[in-house]
Picture 1: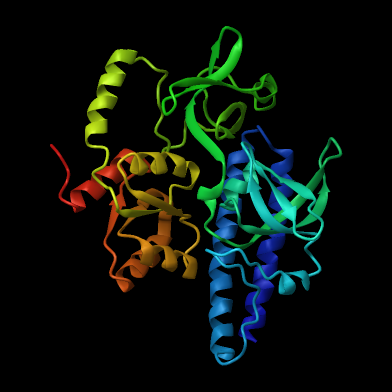
Picture 2: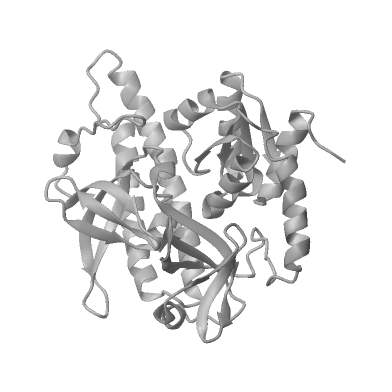
Length: 357
């Protein structure tokens, strides 16, 4: 009876989230968009907690039974779609492929691609290779189809994506819009249509995504709100190139201090690529997990890690769960007091006794 009550509440939460997605589709670029996104995140968290409760009860009831859930091997190729296909809701069912902006769900039966908007990717913490289900829920004002998407299995394959991204202030140079990538030391241009569609102005902080080796494929994936306290704003480049190169050369001398170390970052969903660059530059093997999802998949990643970085501002009340996973597996962990990658690096070096004054 209790399980049935949980299921009823869970379905109510899902219906409420679908309604919020409809509102989001009508509010793109408007002030209400960010508040609606926050509500969606809260509903996702509530759904997750209820799902874990239901799963726990099912495990108690069917301890000796055959597993009744579909499988997708995190580190393998095989995906068993059979049980998901029994759910008549899913008109599209398959793996997610990341694009410079958003991505596509590739249906495993037909090969047909369904576009997944960037907002859904972020709100659902979707990664390249995850298994998604989708069904049509309506149309927008222009007649385009709007789908409801749900992550059915997280496979931890983000590093296999060919997508690269960076966050920088938007600039206009010689009539071309774009931003400067400190990583590659190039000015990456973006389509004029992105500027108009997102109502952007020079100086706006944006994330630009593009295919590895092809900056011409760049698109603006996201516009950041400068009022967000978690965002560390970066000014337009003012440091002379020679000074920057001298500083980079000095940093390079210490760049391999984490060689051979497996670093797992939990949280910082919005710009995990920045954390990846900071740790990999110093020789570490980097992995990441969303702050919203705590379960067996996280536990597997913790077991493989040498040090776990918990980004506190992103974790909210999930932090004790992550701490518990680390302690059960005897893995040291540190806290990053903000979403800044440099702060996380300092904490790791301090733990290893490598921090320099």
